[in-house]
Image (cartoon, rainbow, N blue to C red; front, side, top):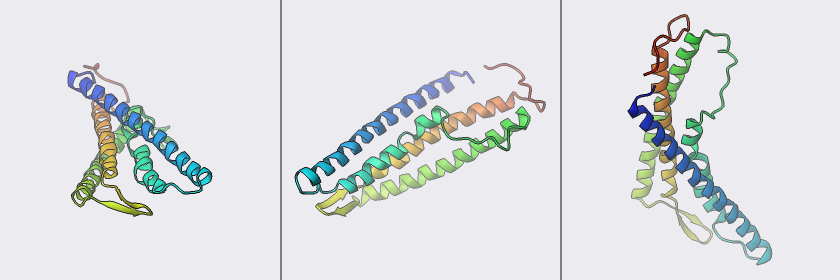
Length: 181
């Protein structure tokens, strides 16, 4: 699939994935610094640093988990098992793969929509968590889910388009007909 639109979308997908992965990397560093500062404060100063557990669990862990999903998808780095499909013909393998990708697109689109609604509701009420030292605004971290899953969905949509195009050029004997555009 070599249309200009598809190539432009692929470049956007890669840039988005890399940007979100870089942001997640910064949250890994922040998580390490939060935890080290909490341990240092408790042992060296004799006083625990307030809110470390809440910040790590609300912001750092959520960002590290969800923001890199688009990059992982773009790199085709998800875990896959081919135990039942390795003996299939190329045609049937492509059919099953395409149906699976379409299913993932539908499912991840739905999850993106639901998490976006939850993030919007959290924003509207300025959601906070009570911690030992006061209140921690958590509504901002609710945006990580629709952002990460939405970017992953965009990657899966591009993969679905590519697989449908590829499937349309494979005959029932598994031979590719025609050439790429």
